[in-house]
Image (cartoon, rainbow, N blue to C red; front, side, top):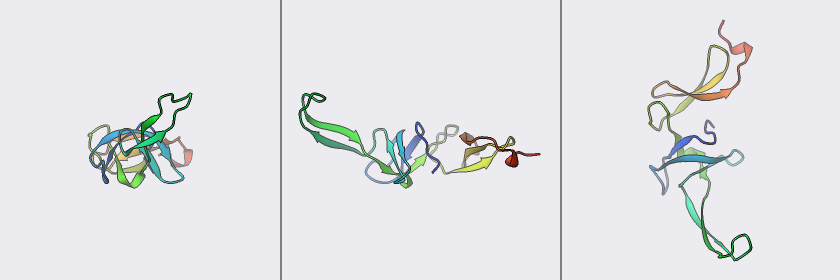
Length: 115
């Protein structure tokens, strides 16, 4: 899964198809991500000291990671991403549409450095 917290993603299926938002949380065990503004539900809460009025609380629920596409920072399009090794041996994500790098995934390792 190439998606990390604070990435911009676009929802590609479901009720919120076409909406873009920031990733708030990544749940790796279930393969889901929580996207800001997508898959909002109402949770009914009763009165308490923490929530003195009670009522309906609107919150985002997780979306399957297969239903979102990462948005490239360089070209601005929702594209597929891959991984490649750089000259110093570090690993980065790259946009398969425009070829631009989009953040480091793993630190440099000597065995992957170009000689």
